Length: 597
Image 1 (cartoon, rainbow, N blue to C red):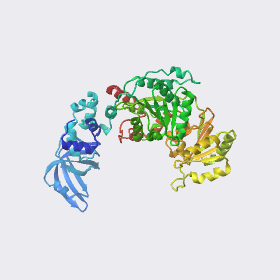
Image 2 (image 1 turned 30 degrees about the vertical axis):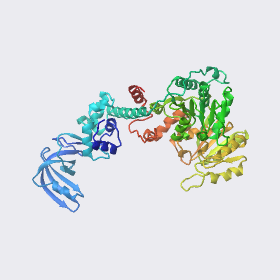
Image 3 (image 1 turned 90 degrees about the vertical axis):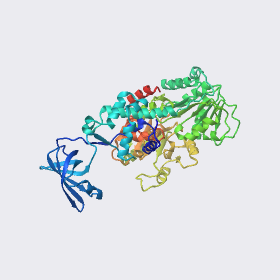
Image 4 (image 1 turned 60 degrees about the horizontal axis):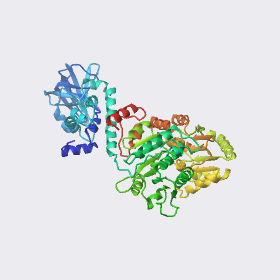
């Protein structure tokens, strides 16, 4: 893309880097400077007119025109005129004027007429950081079919988008985007974005490549892996064979058995070393316990802030929190990050570099329990391979319902009954301290009631430095846990059967799903109550009838609209205007095929 220095500055001002992105800045309207012989009521229109009179009132200029093309007298009115406007209208002059004509009972008026010189064509109007005339010149100079084809578009899509910038009479019809135009815009938007993602993907030589089979290990398990767990493990097995360092994201719903995929990856890597970073001490401990149980042949280490520093080079599998970043780590052939969204990009990259051998990089797997729409997974695959685990090893039996103030006594009865069965209850409050902005109790306001009426009540929240210890104590000895959304991810609470979410309408559907996923982890009957002051909420009603995290992600799209979501898709500030995640899987497939991703 060869641009002059001046035009490069204009592209920068528009926030674009390619002809494709320029083509997406479509006009918001058009001005039709063709001369018509018929009146177009209440539409902007060009007249070939002689000025018959000019009258200047205190706040307006009134001009009488005779429109030769229409054979009609028209009264022009300019409100709050600027001084220069008066000079455009001289009695006896014949020129071309443009404005909206409105006729009532034979009298026609033109609002805010302006003198024009570009006659006979339809002109696009843009709302951009550039003046319209500057934008028009830029578009005329660079938006050519040749330039769009050189960017990789096919001819049909190039023609469809060019028609929006260089319109004909049909383009103006009804001012609605045609199906063809809309499809072209969706395609270009995705094509441009995914090509950029693919360009950012970097390939490194792997520390090692192996092809150890996981079958001997899976046969020792006391349960059968699900088809989707096996598919994810097979994907990883194929990755580990390559001499290019793998980059894969495994996205699984709450309770879908990602831990077994992690352990299978570590098993396949043996005798080479694997390292796993988890976001909390509780999670690291749980993973360590599972690894000891199901990987007896591996020598496993646990690294947290509490563990003593030691030489880790004798271990096959090192599991830890971000404390790993501050230890001397031996080289590893595989790096895994659990709940990857809980770590910053910097931390994830730091771990990868810490254990790299010179120019060679370890295979890299990241795991997430936040399901994403299928379409997003397909888009993300431009820069990282993606495996989805959409099923769970066993179906959870959880009743979900929306409740209000009038249901409180029924809720209390249920809580007492569950505690009597030695089950545990979680109540999630929106805030720790009282707030006048919120029509719900905070933890500080509510805890007194629960502590007075129940035994073994534990309280924690995000700012509580001892929260991990509180959760561990609650797991062993508690009946009731009062908390904020700090329990959203991670800890396994086998006896937890009920979650009550106060002010549920304030939380995203994926957060509600994560909280609901805390209960019924071991097959017990579960209950999720969404407490709200809203009389009716279609969003919450649909949530209680949806159990799959991937369906929840699509439901979230329906209520949030994909434009909002996409803003954060790649953390690059890129915003999709045309693509709809819930609807446009077909377009994504086409773009992937064309880009050979």
